[in-house]
Figure 1: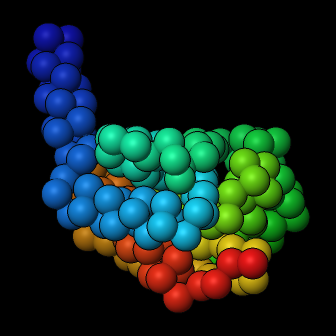
Figure 2: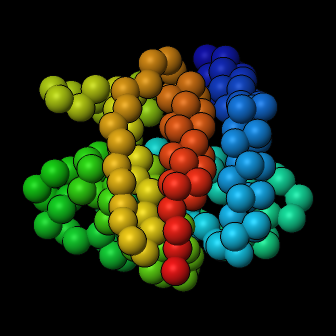
Length: 185
């Protein structure tokens, strides 16, 4: 039984790693980094359910250090509070998977890493963890600049790896759209 579990776990890890850098993610991240570099802007990430996939995608591109400041993987609520400055009251009132927490994560990482643009993701990748009003696949994204922040709610289908990949793509696309229509002073 242990051998079967180990081989199943190894297969899942292998599948997750192979999904880490798909063509869509790389294309969006490449365009995001190009646009940031042209404008002389920087970007930072705050990730929960994606566990660093956004940052890994950004840093898979040569030259990314010119625009990508870094990221914080804040999976536990305590990390969201300590590392990103998410107010505990937001977690108590709305839960970790919420618009308020996603926005606070984006604003917190933007401030802490002194970036022009920040993107944040919090969600329920599954297979467990969902419940009434917060199904498996629910992801909140936020992107913040000095002038504004925006949030978006998504419910992505599929298994854990598919939800994480879709959230990564959506976060990169949101950051690119924000950079494309924002003038940062």
